Image 1: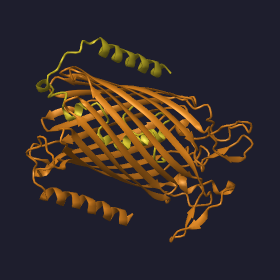
Image 2: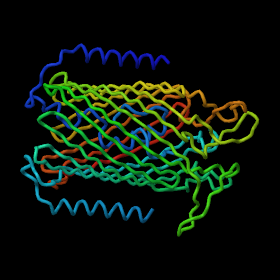
Image 3: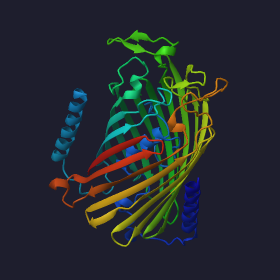
Image 4: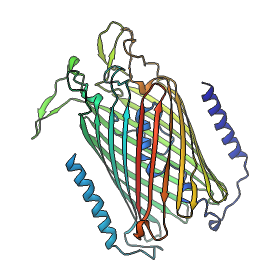
Length: 75
Length: 402
């Protein structure tokens, strides 16, 4: 459970850092790094099967933009 | 299996041939004709092994392989009011073998000989009003395998903030599923009927419904940093266990897994992506999860794509996951006969897992292998292990055409 507590603390720090950061207005021509294919704020297509097997093999699911039902994962 | 391989090869060849003949779309600006946007092929091979199968009551082989392929086609068209309409067609085909499914009949051969194919097409439409910064959409999905059928639908909405640096989105998804009641052979009370040309057994079914409201808010912090907050409320009802999962009681008697017919799940997550310098990206994710079956879980992952040059990157990643057990879980022969609900499914037990690996991504300016429309090739490998011994490996490939 210590690891879980550490994870909670890391999560809190990240949220606090993000909220406390002053958001600057970014113009379209300044977004070349934000628009990089690896900066996308979602699971990438190649992670699709990984997300599926984790949904089936673990008790938790959701909050990742993926599916939350449909398809058995019976085995 | 041979048939399936031929279908795959046919689809690959067909797609390559199609792109070889198509012309480059140089003027995407406000195109009122239905036009090609991109196509993706994602293939994965997954293999797992362990000794805690729920089919045999928490003991026995978990050996399983899954060959997964999906084909996605995106088209778009601007309407008269200059709103972008996107159409997304997807077809997924999985072929799996499972040793544990063989054990529905305990007298069967225990090799990984049981196999099935899952087919899951979907179609989605979105309409983006670039002027207003809003998007609406809807979609339908279907999934079919031998003992499970699923019908899905969704509606979604997204709106950008005035300065376009933030976006709120909401998606409501529903899945109406039918679980075939395939019971372990030695305690079978529901006898299947034989039907169809091939004389396949037809089992009675039971419904399983899922309702998911998923919301997110993304925010650009600066030119290098953006975050997203995610939250879902998921409610399920119907048959939520699996009919062929055995539970061995302390008395030695074998019974069918029995779980409540409702479940509410609440996952909350945050993503944070940071472009550090010119060559390194930090992709972080954290999720807290809780449900009314007693599971609490934490997930944290970090992926660090390193740009070797402008068209080649290497991405090592690590994911840590931990969960508490559902209150209904007990290992082999530890369930008391007076328990109302019970399972020996180790996926619902107390464990932690590690998942690590790396990927490569190739996006040459003249196309992969010099093929102009072959925009990206990505390959990724990962090794997964649970604290109670289950292990798996997965290798995936994404081909993108534009």
